[in-house]
Image (tube, rainbow, N blue to C red; front, side, top):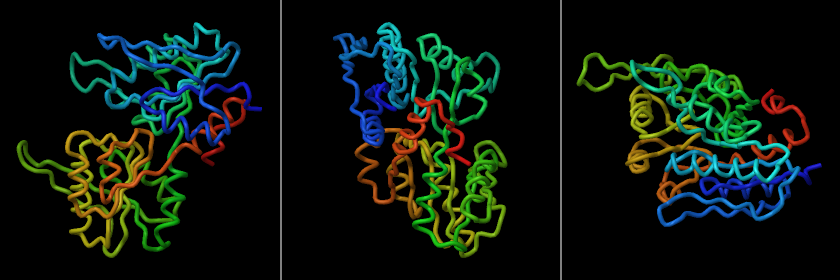
Length: 314
């Protein structure tokens, strides 16, 4: 059933691709990705993919431009090698935060990247927890946006007792995501209302909901600098929360984010391996990584057999 699948790993996501291949009981396809002296990227597929269903696993995480270019060149290599169908599996879709014009004379980079992936030769895209759902519409090819919620729900139920859980959105924009998770684990919902009263003044965190004595679970799609997350956790604890954990899909964790979170009063930050964890993340006392390989592997298997992917989340 899966014999015609070829899974190719980019440098950004090799451990994840290996885990996906292990889930599907398939070997990774041999693919060499190297650089010339001037850092140009060279890709060579070292086995036959003619007529095969090719899945290229590559997050466009830091360094985003290098990993994006790798992805485009791997797609082109597969297309020119007569692959039957090429699916770009992008666990973390970089440039997703630039999904609209926030002021005059600015780009919509998410649309540009979607165009590049399509023009390179991808037939479909498989991604995870897009920062903005409308990005699916930026592609002119079929796009499946998976959700890490089932993986998180399983982990939460194993670690927190019912009745003590409260899901919290770190800002008003994430309420839909937080509400969906709260429904899955039968928990109540709270919201952190973040305001800056005047320019140059620090943000004021107002908690909407009673968090007294609750184990609060902050939920979001991306953690980058970690500042908002740490501040939200502090506000919840000051409001009487028993403890605060955070479940975030994509651990971008740039700059001093890891040390900021490690020094905070947050009980735990749980992220997925959509982005390859750095050594600092692995060593942090309160950061834990859960794998999305089974979820992606199941979605890839269903895509190859033309089965329903959306039923994974019902």
